[in-house]
Image (cartoon, rainbow, N blue to C red; front, side, top):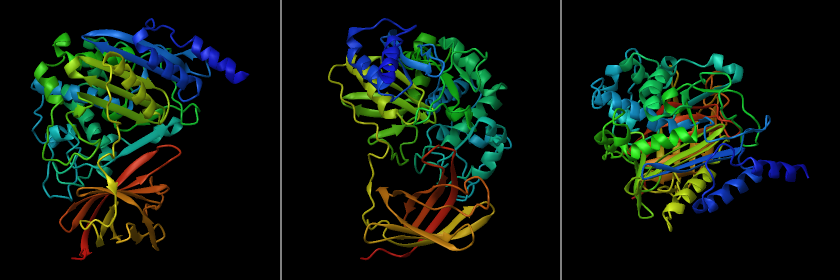
Length: 500
């Protein structure tokens, strides 16, 4: 009975402070209310723009379940990685204003922040390659919760430890939060303002993003969604140490105005030129391996798929503890949609709601699923990898000898000196796309009490060039809660070649 009463209450508040229902979006509304009723999400906020007009905006459920505070289209949500197009817009804006050169080495604007380059001595990625994730930086994240936020390192400390170019710049588009953290620092250095102040003055205010902010809201009574974990438990305050990668909060009404600008830059010419917006939607590094999301590429802050069910689509998702978000544009039709949710790992739901919104205006629209590993297939003794590989993992100030054996039976074995100096090993499966290999082993690196020592998984992310494999082994705190993804440079040479 309590469940029935709660469901009725949620439905009753589904449209508070939002636009009136539109019959074209009936399927979307059924899906959203069913998801709220089933407990899949505490709340969802949706907005749609068409031909420069916001044609639909509505919120469902609760921004704060415990306080019975209904979500509205003005409720600010954590955007997670949907922050990245906003950061990229700021960088391209600064370039158009002559404050930086996208093709200059990023080091020119980073001051004391220095990247290490064991993969290729002297390599210095450009600002453009930071934007397109082709700088050579690895997978990375560090999150801190509640009282532990005070222990969070500065960006400078994180860069000094993990700012390692594990691939030559331009070799592969490897998604890197650290790269976007550096871009946030460049915004600060080239503008003379904090990252949040710059966005507020130069992006949020001109676009009418009245509820958007970076970090903490301006007032204690601001309408901000509470974040919930996968079990619908409220999360404590969260801090991500790369603000340019994921620290913006915005409402659905805010973000759809950002979407409208990227569909029609003439609507806010003071922010950026039409040429600048178009530049962000092109492949800035066509020689790099684009291995995520099937036939897609990463432009400057956007994923782009030229043919997605017959439509060219521009998008970015966001996902971190307490946040699942998406912004999706069909430029040729001048259509855009945003969907925001305050719960962990429900991007499948936000994708579904976004596609139903677009299908309401484009009947028959049938996009491909947003599967980041769609290009990959299981490792099955492909000759490119088959054999015995020996090398080292760089852990702090020392090198740890390591061996990888890619077996004929389709399994991979890794062995190295573990936390107590004794050999540890594990067999694991992996996936392959071209020269790229990704796997996960249930092991920990010898980190001697440092963060990452208690990782539950070790991600293996390597790229082959002839008889050399290099990349990163990533300590991953999962699956209960994301605390970190900490990369360590690794390089291997094949000792036993594949049979001829």
